[in-house]
Image (cartoon, rainbow, N blue to C red; front, side, top):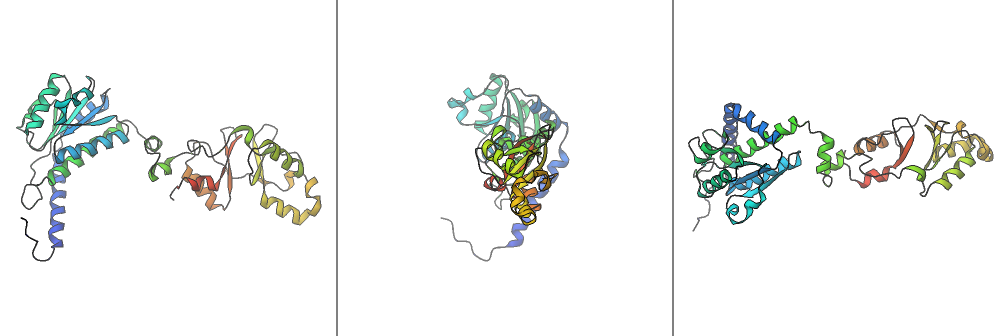
Amino acid sequence: MIEPHKGKMDLEEARQLIHQEAQAMLRMAAGLDQNFCRAAQMIYDCTGSIVLSGIGKAGIVAQKISATFGSTGTPSHFLHAAEAVHGDLGRLRGEDLAIVLSHSGESEEIVRLIALLKQLGITMIGITGNPDSALAKHSNVTILLGKIEEACPLGLAPSTSTTCMLALGDALALTVMKMRNFQAEDYARYHPGGSLGRKLVTVEQAAMFSPGKALPQAPDHCTVQEALQKAEAGSAFRHGCVLLLDEQGKLSGLLTDGDLRRGMEKKGKKIHSCPVREIMTRNPKVVRPDTLASEALAILHKHRIDEIPVVDNDGCPVGLIDVQDVVALKVIQ
């Protein structure tokens, strides 16, 4: 039976535990050699999946590393070392590459897994703290954690060792990510549901506008009344502005509710027969289909406008974004 803890919690002791783990990571970083570079190149060159495996706490870390690989452009999945002998070996293919994590490198499940991987001809990267272990000896490339003393007061619970494994796994995944020239737009494709992904979604990916004939548009050489009639007839949706096009079909201006109010103040009832060019907003703010949704929202807020046209490389309108479309994405600024 565990006795209740006596005395006050020691905050300085907590800081020391964190400091101990941080120092271990720094020593590990200083001790990295060309084996890390070889491992990163092997992962980059792999035509199959990167299979992470481990047992116990190391297995949990392996799952996280696998998730990091997957979200940064490298196909990956997790294989539980103990379940491998019960059918899960069927997840492996000859072109896969295994990364096996074990501090001791000698646990029964890990030794058994090593033998199975070698029988299947699977290339293996070992991450261990024991250079004389079976894992170190039988891996194609071994990355050593260095001398590790667990931060656990009893020296038993995996703590420093798993922290170092996690940092090393992140270093491998993010190094390969950089080798692949993995960009923010790529990251967004794998994270469409989270706030990070929403920030990186483009206006085109978000499908925030209806292209083509649904746009409220009219030629810029017509009258205000004609522009309003053409826009209403050509668009299936109600909008707060009309896109005005020149003879080449390029956007030359907008007719907004504000333009109409100001025009009526100046021209009164004659506003309907007034050439639209006289009251339209010239050189309006625009975005491209590949503009980030977060950037579009920033433009809308900065200039206090409700709608912004989407134009192609030739300056021809292909869509119209309403501020509510972007807000609905819950894009965080």
